[in-house]
Length: 161
Image (cartoon, rainbow, N blue to C red; front, top):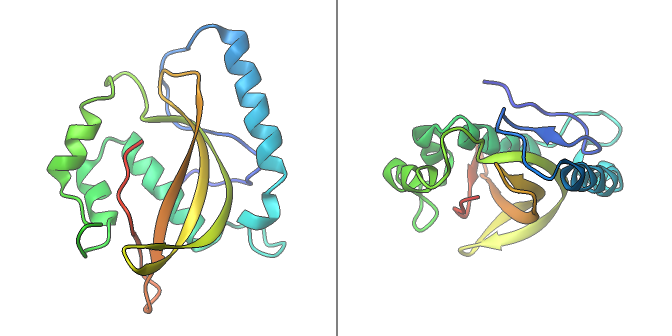
């Protein structure tokens, strides 16, 4: 499944969860995420090409796999070294904590990228502001994407939403 990638200026709607309340609080939150995301567009997309960098696209795929509740794909996306590798059964435990009628990540915006280190390996930290399914609070996360020498990508540090 192709990721729903667009410019960083747009908030990604990730699933069809229930409408949270109060509605006006949610609208203000989404508006705030959109304004913040618009300010970092150049950091996320390539130089004027309008397509996301490979680590950003991989982070979008990661979010999609979580929202698809595909524990096997989430597991396969983690790097194969310990402690980054995470078994599908462990991912499923995290998925079981999110009601089935809600997306794991309801809305999100990629805020930028920066170099980082995870378990002694270089990674690209994809900075994500997101709202959990069924929640009203915006949160921040770092999705650590490792770009291997052969160009292959993997999640360099497991974290659940």
